[in-house]
Length: 327
Image (cartoon, rainbow, N blue to C red; front, side, top):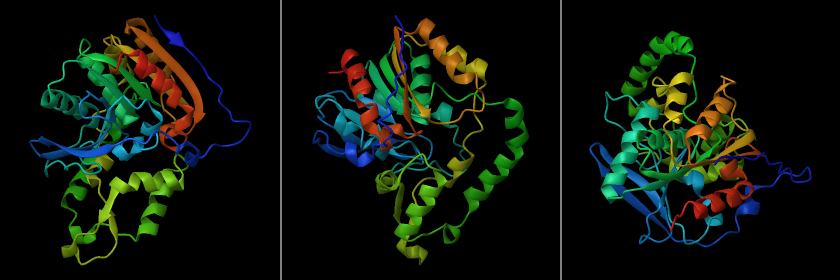
């Protein structure tokens, strides 16, 4: 059974700040590290360690802090493990010489985490890139996913392959430049300047308070041996050229048709702009045909709706997780 719902949550013409959503359940959190061949994958575990958590994944160049405002609004008995993807937040960067193929690497990463903890069936939640990874894992292992929540993405965004081919050489040169950039030339900022840089880069998708939440994991003091004072961004610069392994619309739909589990898709309006206008409705339609149940909501908000105005989606996410038998 599938369900399509379009919600108008305009709040009488008033914007609702993230501070309004800060009153939630007081929950314990614990920093964890998962060993991987290139170092560690860091994470933030919300709730009891005695319960299998929902695995949560952030967007491109964000980090696990992206869920810091949503998690306190979800049912207290549901544990959540928010992961810093490789090269993001507190997780290890890939070794030199390795590219990030973010829409493919994430499938292996989720599989590593599942095998590390010995789980047989999982529930996933993701924003943007993290939602695309949840989608891809559910397609790769359709009988081992109970359900997943996708926030402002349907699956990996479909890319015009002619544009991708035209930009390939430039991407390779940028990758080699970032790989060989000496630490002495790494940008270093005062705290306020770093926050301003990030706020401007997100171009209205986040507010000041949200940036400060993300940067708790997204920046670190400059190393003492660098002879610089201030902060640098902790993410791997090579992530800026991590979009070489993108999929065509046909590939995305082929994966969508393999998904069997329950799906909650929340699309923010206006949210993120996708260059292929057929992408979102086509992928949702494909999942409707194959998934056990698809719930689709359109809710007013920016691309980072879960971080800036989490109260607008917390009930939908809570209901879905409860209905998906998350213990």
